[in-house]
Amino acid sequence: MAITNKMFQDRAQKYEKDIGILISKEMIDELKIIVETKFSLYIEGDRLVIEPKQMNLIIKEMVDLITEENKHNQ
Image (tube, rainbow, N blue to C red; front, side, top):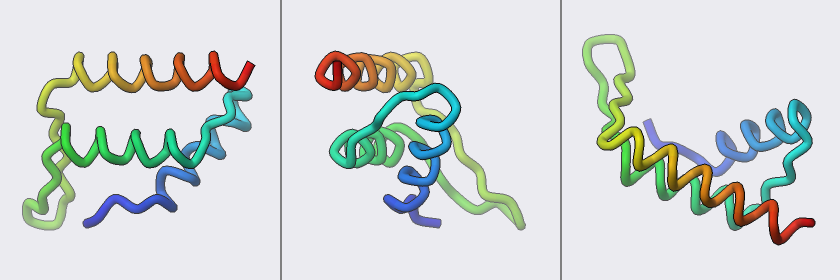
């Protein structure tokens, strides 16, 4: 299963509605790259398995990106 920009855009719109954070297309692309490079995705039986490679690092990178993006939007 490929991670698509549409998935990230849908999620970004949900978060924008929930907490009022604007997320740019460039940031969506950066988050997509983080997920694709930091997570292992594979099919096991009838399940999609998503395993973080280094969860703390992933969370820190995503928070840093969002924080930086919000500084630019203010």
